[in-house]
Image 1 (cartoon, rainbow, N blue to C red):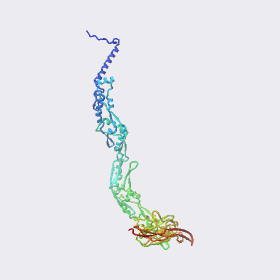
Image 2: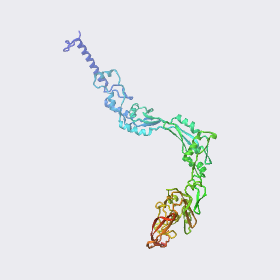
Image 3: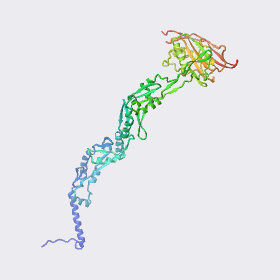
Image 4: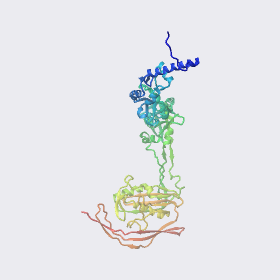
Length: 575
C-alpha cells in the first residue's frame, strides 16, 4: 500500500503549466540556496588577482590579502626611455597605485543575485585585472621633472678643424617627452609590472637640418682639401705661407637655412697670426705726406711723400678661401692691397696753396731733461700736420694724452696755481709756440687758455697752456687754402712754422698796459714734493691782433687775459 501524500492546498486546482512552473521555481530556489551554502563567502572560487588567490574569501579577507601583495608590486620602479636616454619612474612619487577596494569590487560576486550565485556553481572565478588609480597632477609633475634629464635637443651634423685635421660630428635626432601622453602610457606598464621591460614614452622628435650625408659632402668637397697642404700668398711684395694648422684655427663650417654647410674664415683673426702680421709689419700702412720746409718766404718740398699700403681683413679672406679647394701649385695667390694716398705730395703742394711761409715763432726755455723729452715728443707728433680749408686743428687730438705710454715723462707744470710735478710738464712751451704761430698766421682761434699766473719767458697775454680732458688749443683754418705745420725743437727752444697761403699781408701785435695789479702772498709747504716758487704780481692785460692788407689796417681782434698772483712758496722739512 503506497503512503499517502497529503494534498497541498490549491494544487489540485492548478493547471499543468502552473504545476510545471512551480516545480521549476522550487528547483531554482534549491540551486540558489545550494550556491549560497557552497560559496562560503562573497568571491567565487578560483578568483585570482595577479596570481594571488582570493577565491572564496570575504571582502574584508580579500582586501587585506591584496593590500599585502599589491603594495609590493606597486612600488617597483618602471624603466622608461625617451629617444636613446633611459630613466626610471617611481610609481609612488608619480601617483600610480593599485585601487584595492576597486579591485575587490570587481572580483566580488553579484551578492544575492540568483543568476550570479547559481552561475558560480558551474564555473571558477578566473584571474581579475587589478584596478589602477592615477593621481594625474603628481604623475605630470614627476614626468616633467624626468623630462629635464631625458629630453635631448637635436644635434646638427658639423665639421670642425683642429691642429690641421678634420673632425666630424654626427647628427642626432632630438626627443622631447610628451608629458600628457606619457601619463596614460604608463598605466599599462604599471599594471603589468614587468621589471625587465623598458617603456618607450611618447615624445616629439626634432630632426637636425644638417644630415649625415651633408657632413660627408662637406668633408669631401671642402674640409679635406682645405687641410691637405699649406697655401702661399703675396701682399705688397711680401710673401708668406699659411699652414693647415694656422688655417684651421680660423676656419669654420656653418649651416645655411637649408642645412648646407658652407665655409667661413675669420679673416681678422688670421690677419693677427704671426705668420701674417710678421710678414706684413714692414709694409707702410699709413701714408706719409711730403715734408715741407720754409726756404726764405717760400714753402719747398724737402722730402717726397710715401703711399700707404693697406692689407684689409676682407682682402685677405677673399684671397685665401678660393685656394683651399685647390691642389699643388694652384694653392698660391695674391692678396689685393689698397693704396692710401697722402694728402700732400710734390705734385699737389702748390695746388693746395702750400707755397709760402705764413708765420713762424720760437720760444726759448731753460734746459731740463724732462723739457727736452716732452717738448721733443710733442714736436714729433705735431710736425707735418696738414689742416685743410675749413678744418679745425686740435693740440690734444694731435699730441694725445701725456702719458708714459705715449712717450712723455714727469715734469714741472702749474696745477691749482702752484708748480707741481706731473706727466708732460713743459709741453705748455709747445702750446704757446703753436698759439703764436696761429696768432701771426691770422687764422681763427677756437679754444685756448692762458696759464693761471704769468710765466716770464712767454709774451704777456699771448701764451697758452693745455690740459688733457679739460683745456685744448684749437684753431680753424679759415685761410681758404691748405695749411702745413712745421715743428722743430732743441734742448732750449721750440719753433713752429705755418706754411700755406697768407690771408693778410701782415699780422702784428699791440699789447696794452697791465691793469688791476694784485699782490701775491707767501705760503710755507712741508709737502714731500713741494716745488719752490718765486712771487709775481697778478694783473690783467689786453693784446690786440692787428690785420693789414694792401698797406692798410683792415681789422683788430682783442685777446684779454687775467693772471692771478703767483704766490711765493717756501718748502720746509716736515720733521
